[in-house]
Image (cartoon, rainbow, N blue to C red; front, side, top):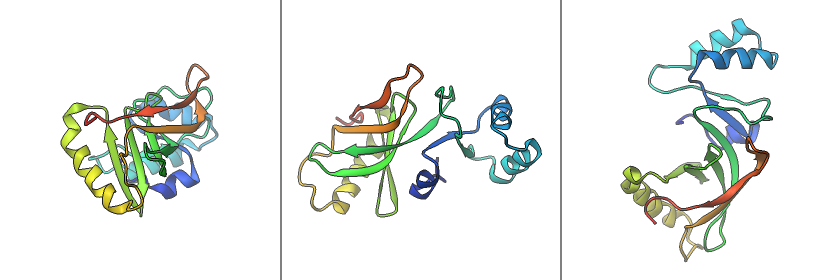
Length: 158
C-alpha cells in the first residue's frame, strides 16, 4: 500500500486494505460512526489503490485480504530494522530506512524488483557488510491460532 509509512505504524500497528463492503459493519461495531466512515472511505479512495484503515481490535486476528502488521527485523548480519509484514504468513515484508520503504516478496515474479531494492538498501546500510537475508521478524500480535506472528523470511531471489 503506497500510503502507509512508518508514521502510520507508529500511530497504529495493524492496518488493513479496504476491499469488502462487509468490513464496514465490523468497523461500525468498533464504535465508528457509519456516516463518517462512508464519507472517509469515499474521500481517501481514489479508485487506483485500496485505501487502508487501522485495525482497532486485533483479537481475534481479522480475516482480511491484506493485513499490514508492524514488525521488527534482524538481518542475517545482525542489523536491526523496522517495518511491517503482510498477513500472518509474511509473504511480503517491508523495511523503513531513511524515510524510504523497501519491500520484498516470496513471489518469484517480483524477483527483479527485489534485486533492485536490495542494491539500494546496501547503499543505505554502510555498516552492513554481510548478507541481508534471511531476516528474522517478530511482531507483537498473535495469529488466528494464538501463535506469535514471527519467523524467518527470504525473498524469491534467495
